[in-house]
Length: 127
Image (cartoon, rainbow, N blue to C red; front, side, top):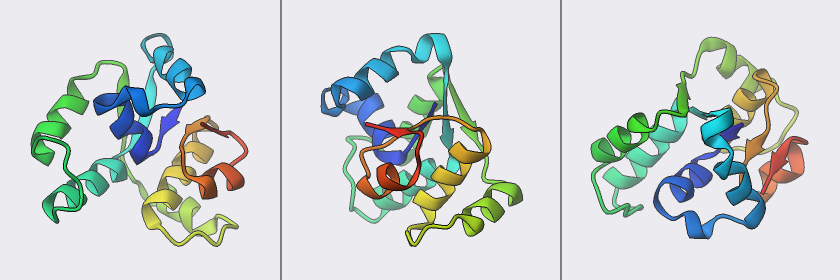
């Protein structure tokens, strides 16, 4: 399973905000593992630095928290991922969302997201 940025933040910092379905999927992470795109960490870092997101810690501390989770793999944004994000037949303009969907598609994996645009576009997206 791939987590989008919001799902990652809620899973790690505010699990009570997850839907019942999302919470159940996250409960399975110790058995199944989870992927996140490195662009999600970048997105969190940018928002924290600009003061648009308060997570109660610095982005560096948050990165350390995420990296300490043993069941999580941070997937780099490779040329293949960028290419896939450009080739998506989707009008959505947010580059981070496009990269996250492209990552899930390339891994042929489910995607946990509360984003309605993602849910409508990617058939394996759940919330």
